[in-house]
Amino acid sequence: MSSPQRLPNKVEIPLSSKPDRDADPRWGLIERILQSPPFQKSANLHGLLSYLAEHSIRGEREALTERQIGRAAFGKPEDYSPAEDSAVRVHVRHLRLRLHEYFAHEGQTERLLVEIPKGSYALEFRPRYMEPVTAPQSLVVAATPPETRARGHFRGQGLLLWCSIAAAVICAIGWYRAVRVHENNQAILWPLNAVIQPDRETRLIVSDGNTMLRLLGDKELTLDQYLASNFRTSLVPTHLPPNISRLVDYISDSQLTSFADLVVASSIAKVAGRSGHPIQIYSARNLNLRELDDGNYIFIGGPTSDPWVGLFTGKLNFEVVEDGVGGKMYFRNRRPLPGEQATYEGLPRTGSAGEEYATISLLPSSTGRGNILILQGLRQEGTEALGEFLQNSADHAQLEKALNIHEGSSTPVYFEALVHARVVAGAPLSISVVATRTIQP
Image (cartoon, rainbow, N blue to C red):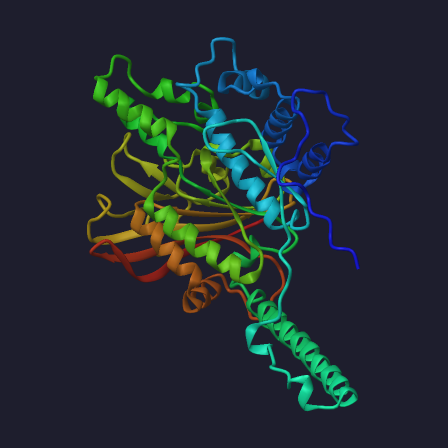
């Protein structure tokens, strides 16, 4: 039997020449990646990878500077300054993650890998080696030396031995797969199972630290302003002291979010991972409006930290209100029912003790091809309370009772619920449902 073929340690295809696409395996790999669902749904990443691949394979290194990529792949103006606009760096970071996810899932059998080394925008291709599968050490059986047995008897015993080993290996593999299937199919509690589904991609959107810049200019931030290319400079006053200017640059160039968002995102990601349906985590800054047409989304944060939530506030009864930029925050009850308050005010500041409020809302997407889950806390403690609420079966039962959902009901229920939490030493306790509304699709 001939030994398996191995790819060379380095793909020896001159980058400076114009390769034949059919003969060059790198083109085929890039085309398969671009056809995968995450790249089909993100025009930005699709266009970025296409551009980097085209010029990397052709060896056109002069086209792989940050300025050139920004102008060619993102339509930046001639006077575009990478120091002031981090779009290329941000999208390349996301592209690195998507490539890693591709080779971990759809591209598990690819024999060639592609990477973007840190500090460079040129793609690197390298072979992937498949390691041989070996039997577990516990299944290795010591055979009796052949000189102690007759040849024919030894052959019979050897055949029996190897058949036994093969059967044991097959049983072990079957048991392992059965355990994995059992672990990866744990039921997800409602309402998370409305946004974590096997037939749809789920994206979890955390808040963007750049929205804090509105505090410097004492300006409110709408979604339209947030999506504008100059939204940072429009919020920041001119002629800042050098130390404040450096801080602004750091915030602008970094993917910052709140600790509460990370806690909730981590909890939801673990739940999704156990079900076998992992989710993708994005910063609000890297979301594209067209991407909202398909798939399920989980938004963490209110409109002051995640302006995308402003798209849905018109459909909700409980509205987050900020009394002046950086001022008191509370929920406004647009249409109070008997026994309800007109407003619900939470903690005066993060880290204090007292009463806190948050809302959890489930809506259909505008196209009907996905669902939207929104988790809004007035302060970080309220957001953390929702993370605990989603994982607690007793809290789920409380929510279903408040919405009058009966066991065994298969009809999707879209809703919003106002949740109260008592906070002690920065930790949310005794979470309860205060009021609910049903949302008609």
